[in-house]
Length: 371
Image (cartoon, rainbow, N blue to C red):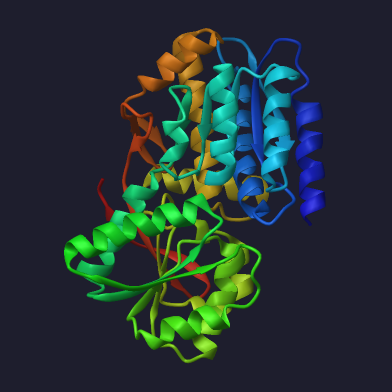
């Protein structure tokens, strides 16, 4: 399935975008590794946006051309691919990586080369701290962690929370730190912080330690690849706790792995198909027509990232990288699928955060928290 999808992406790039006069967008992500669900969804959203833009005449008469790079979720591959996109393919801008760790690596290379880069979904604050050519379409971990802490304490009335953190993930550790700081400030208690590895397949020892401190909930700021199994083991051990998470849970594969054990969990996210807004309904219908499946947040953020760049390119009327960076940084009130975006001084968007509840194998819109 993944190979077929990747082949389709490559075929799309090599045929649809074969143009003599184009604006080159380098898109790097994991399309075949452990977090490939993120990469494929993100690219699908980018592809949809680019198709729409080109069908409408392109950018000031020029078509957009996508050049993809598959890093397989491996940091060494990310370095090689981003350098190739910049030095050999001569891309004008970069979109990637969906994950925070990959984004930080790519950002360092892009900043050195002074090529504008936007990460669709990398939430770690360190990404845009790399330099002034780096942007993001999603909210940062500090916002996401703070919102979940507030929701857990004030709405769910939770006072004792344990954490299960991926020690090899910048994303996971950043969210955990933000949640801890905010939850304690509100008067809650983080009763334990236990770690796992992204390669772990069993979590018995960690859950046994958590069970001993008797939390009301477990905050698991990780990726979908482990969450499903963790949820299964939590319920198999008859732990009556609420599971809390972030946008890294967002993947159809999550429900294949965790099934009904995920019901009544809550996450923070940038997007849900059930958000009651007209532009969201239009996007969902168009995406479903194109791909025959519902979009997730990574698809929506990929779509917004491509449109943010297109908007800046139109206003700049140039591919001069410094001018494009300056125009992108001045973006205000851009109406995206994931919310209205204005970049702050650190090139992070101020935008709403959505609380989603899992019910019957689906993410269901629960509430909007203004940021």
